[in-house]
Image 1 (cartoon, rainbow, N blue to C red):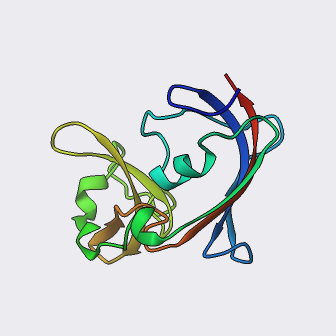
Image 2: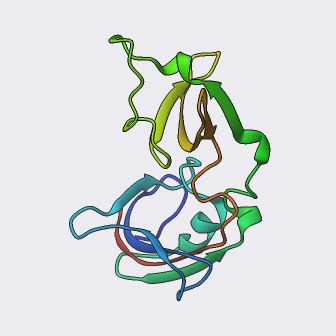
Length: 149
């Protein structure tokens, strides 16, 4: 069976930044393939185009430029918040929870949960980056289709 719209797909991949020689930023592990339904906008369009028509056992490689992946980093998605908004029930600030590089779940005004990364901790505030972690990066995937149904 070949991958087509509505196919349930399982595949293994390695994701590099920039090229096959670039830093590995993500990869599947044995027994834990990526699983998705083709055509439901779960994957980047260029990634889906690269695996369209493939069958189990076939390999793929795809380079996705930044503009077709997660776009450039947007400085407007760095937001500053007063530390007072994050004081715990015990009245204390948690240095470990809000250290630079930590992921912080937050809610938008309409109730959606979004993930931010603590970019900077200041004396009375913190700056949280809401860009996708791979914004500003060219992506290079290589992998193999495990199953199609």
